[in-house]
Image (cartoon, rainbow, N blue to C red; front, side):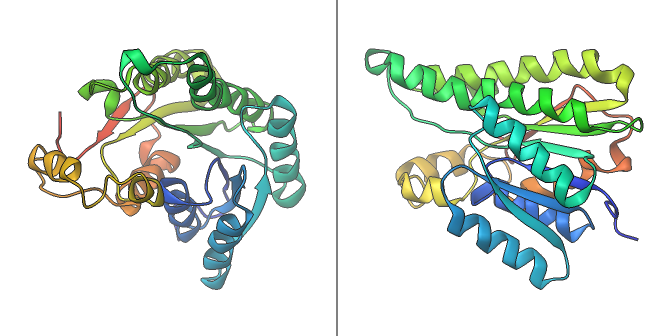
Length: 249
């Protein structure tokens, strides 16, 4: 039997990239998946189509995690479609890099509202839906919080916050049998890193040169860890930050 048969998962920001990879990975192991998206309906529908074509179950639900009303609706639609909730993957995130001289209030609130507030709102709502058997919350942080790259003061700050929130909530929610962990990816080849100009650039070459495993990550690399953390295989794991960077430090 697949590891997640009968489970229901919400994956935020799952229309592309790491989120899409995780949604497909969870579905391949038997979970019914809510593919959340903020703007890209086309991308979310594509992910759903790929899942259902392989015999899995998935629906697309629009909503910005930075808006409490949207978050409420995402979980209401999950309950309506699948009747329960077992797994939340807080993947939705935005990023922009720049020096301290380039910091703006707008960028600060844009990144913190999605990357931190959105994670908190989604987790707060998910706790209402997890059953007496508990659940698994998987936050997607970033290796930036351990590498501390110049030019990432705001973005890196949000991911340091994710690390802290993960550890706090693991203690706060443990009594409810809710496990809270974070996957902190290094450089991963996604639509975002391609359009951002990182993939194929000197920056990618520098990152790969600093990576003991000698390559850029793929969404599937992260998806496999998400499946592990969502499953009973990780039943004794909570409050952990799994750095998935190919060894880059």
